[in-house]
Image 1 (cartoon, helix red, strand yellow):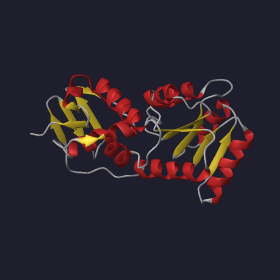
Image 2 (image 1 turned 45 degrees about the vertical axis):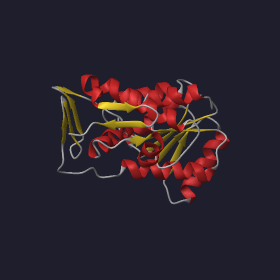
Image 3 (image 1 turned 90 degrees about the vertical axis):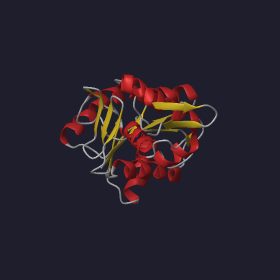
Image 4 (image 1 turned 180 degrees about the vertical axis):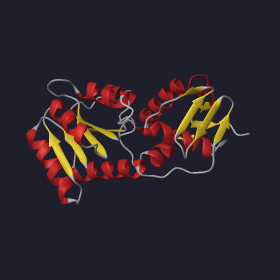
Length: 224
């Protein structure tokens, strides 16, 4: 099930129709109160979320989703008429998994949705755990600790960290990270990676120092 929270009826109906025609179950809502009511009854696999909404804006909705342990890792794609880099970064900073600006093509939207669902459904390595200084990561149990402190990450942040740890010592370019984690390219792509690295470091606290910036190239976690 995919929930579409969009107050523009024409866009909402088109998106829901397109998803249904592609064999995906979808339900649309024109206001957050209806969305929250439906969420109590059934949790979706993914949410398409507009920013400009009545009652409360999309960023507030996103904040509530990320604050709830039951929906913290729920993939959220932001749909908005705002297309500036600032608005993209703002949404990503607050935990959105992706961002697509209106007007958008249905084929592009479907590609983004499939990518998000594919990543969300990926099984993490079950046996291997990573320890780098105070950082402890158990991908199989989805546990991240900075010393004795447990750290909560979004899906994309977790995948990004696991990729860097799995290939310790390898320098990844921003494009390589984008293609590996997001699976496509879009305007402002380098900034998207930078935003996620920055928030990842902040959340990891002292452990965030293990993620090194390689000037002019990208990022890595130092090898043994």
